[in-house]
Image 1 (tube, rainbow, N blue to C red):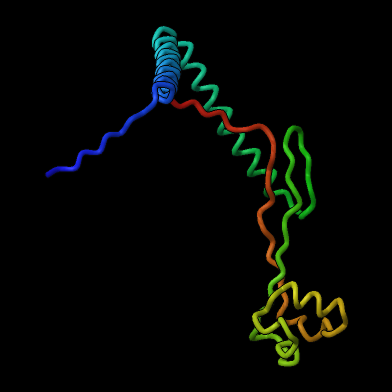
Image 2 (tube, rainbow, N blue to C red; image 1 turned 120 degrees about the horizontal axis):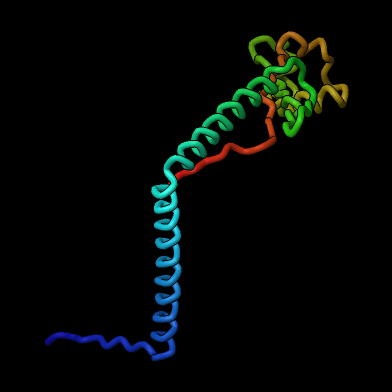
Length: 155
């Protein structure tokens, strides 16, 4: 004998699902039409679009050039040039454990060379700067450049 399970769905739930599907279908249809309209415009105005795409390419190329130029300006401070801003370059302090004095390695929290723990021990006077001076180095990161955005045109 076979067990049959009957699943019932109330009409309000079915109506809600139908309504959601209708909304999705309408939005998809509107999107497809919009995309088709753009493609037709491009096809109907191919000379204009060739000029437009050349302008976008020139814009994006010169944008990358000026960002690189601003990034290469000497110094670590924040720099503002026209619509561009180069943020202050981040500095990360690192310690080479092979170059640290053994007394430094005995300070709690320093064994794994936790930069914050070493700096806290310095600030509290538990360590002398001369104990870590040879092992300490600064690594400068890349400054962030903000300004106009690249133009992208994808279909």
